Image 1 (cartoon, rainbow, N blue to C red):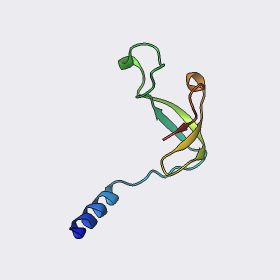
Image 2: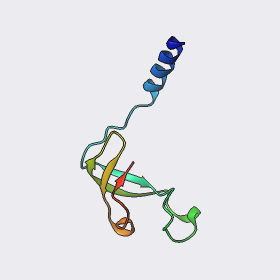
Image 3: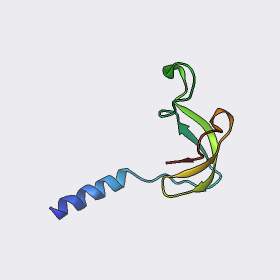
Length: 78
């Protein structure tokens, strides 16, 4: 059983690599869970940005320098 777990982990790790993020990179933010954007959701953009990264808080969490209508959002995103 341990051999099958090891095999599956190796297969998953081979195809799912963490993104290489650095401070100063420009990234897009998904607007899927934003509920304060006005108008019909299907007409809105799927992503907002690009925004500059100010800090890394983990392998997948970053702090962004927000501008425009997203300035009132918390700047840390997972």
